[in-house]
Length: 176
Image (cartoon, rainbow, N blue to C red; front, top):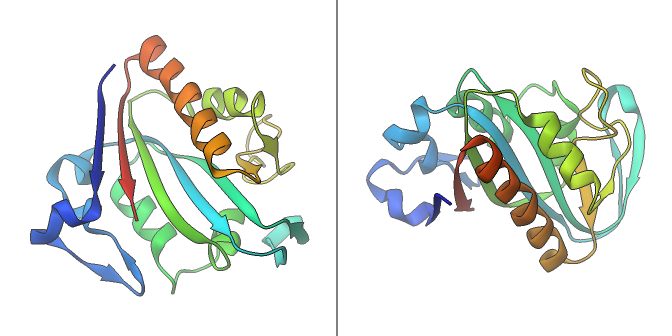
């Protein structure tokens, strides 16, 4: 299994800040040209009602969340959009990110559209936020909840390990 864990501080030479988020990973030459699917791991400290665009106002319990997205056009612009605090609110996740704290980003480098494969795998282990981020597919959701950080991490690692072995993806984890 190819697996690389890195922290943002390893990319100090190209550090860039978008409001409060450090996005130096986007300027790493390997990452800025890579494409694939990604997972944004977030925390809501307390229960919140959040307007999510077309889904309306949803109640989100405090806890840990994982959002699955695709960036087959490249990670750099998609992740930069998600981490920006002054973005145009376009996707359900944009509204949620205004309230949640990003803890980690997992990039799965691949040329294949595996976003829904990963979402279905997570659906077996975590609680889906119904219809969130999945208006353009048949998935139950692309946002998953757990009250326990360890359970969320375990489920993500188990699900992405299946993608590594089945599809040969390369996985990188970045702590924010």
